[in-house]
Structure formats: C-alpha cells, structure tokens
Amino acid sequence: MIKNILLDLDNTILNFSVAERMAAKNALLTAGIQPTDEMLTRYHEINEDQWRLLELGELCHEQIKVRRYELLFEEAGIDKSPLETANIYESLLGIGHYFMEGAEELLRKLSGEYRLYLATNGASSVQKSRIKSADIAKYFRGIYISEDVGYNKPDVRYFEACFKDIPDFRRDETVMIGDSLTSDMRGGINAGIKTVWFNPSCAANSSDILPDYEVGSLDEIPALMERL
Image (cartoon, rainbow, N blue to C red):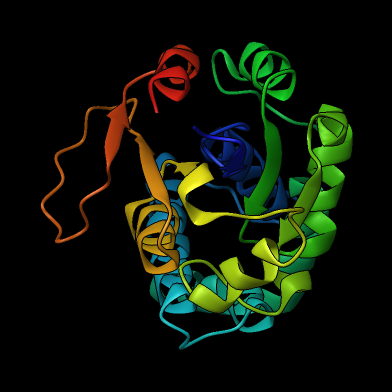
C-alpha cells in the first residue's frame, strides 16, 4: 500500500513550459532584443540540453543560469550580456504560476489520503517563489529543491536525502510521479521505489528507462494509487 508520494513540480504540477517561454520572451525584450518564435524555441532546446547535463553531473545550477544565454547569443550573433539577461529571466520566472490541468484538484485529493513530498530540480529562489505564488506548500509534508538538497534528480543521493526526512520510511510504500524520464523515472528506479510517468503528450519512450506505470492525465493518478 502506498503511503508516500514524491511529486515533481515542473510540467507535473506547474506548467513550466508556459512560464519558461513567457519569462524568456520578457527577459529578451527587457534586454533590448526582439524575440522571434524561432529564438524562443531555440532557447527552450538549449535550456533542456543544459538541464540534461546537470542531471549527468556535468554542470551546476549557476553554470546553467548563464550558459544557456551565452549559447543562444553566440548562435544568434547578439552582443548583449548573458549574465544580465539571465538575472532578468530568473526574476521573471519566479513571478506567477500556471497550473497543469487538474493539478489543484489532484493535490487536494491526494493530500487527504497520502503523505505528499515535492521533489524538484531547480534554483531554490525561483522554485520557492513559484510554490508560494501557487499556494501549494500546504499540501506537502516536505519540499525538496535540488539546489538546497545539494544533489539533483536522478542522483540516488538526492532521493536518500528525501527519504531520511520521511517518518517510518519504506521503499515499498513510496512512489515517484513526474513527467521526466531522465530525472524523475530514472531517479525513482535508481532509488528503488515505484515510478509513475506522467505523459500527457503520449510521447514515445525510446529510452532504456522503463517506468512501472504511465498515465496520460493527472486525474488517472488517484485510482492508480488505490490499486498499488
């Protein structure tokens, strides 16, 4: 029987894709750059690549913060300060929030029946600001942001740090739910707990990462938890 649920934040509870695009667009405008759709899409691609490197332990949060704008500006031939633009972006990213469909209802339902823990990679100041804006801290027994923990998903040390904080912790009573195969699912597998892949776009899984379960919408999760 499941007692502990570790929930990812970005693109599981809060829509990071929308927040990222809005913050990147406004950061570029503030820096005096007119962003095109192509530039914003390329920023997203570069950003994802940098987070993959962080998951592999090849970059840290501070490096990602500036590196994504250094690479974007170099490709586009833009003579602006990557550091200044990165600082503007992070300040904007922490303002406001966008819920994934059904996320608020899911949190209300699950928090009454299970012990919820928020497990997220990201910059501490940005994630805390978004969590506060969305008013979701009240649903969680613990909130674990990778920059504060000192390790990033999928590193097993990240999960072990979370587990130490969970009373009467047992792996067979714990599940990781998230949208990322490489951080959430691989991390849960590394940590020896059950995994549920949230895959609303029905993306094909061509990797060697095999989650225990897959759902296409958040409203499928309560019934699945009851069966586990």
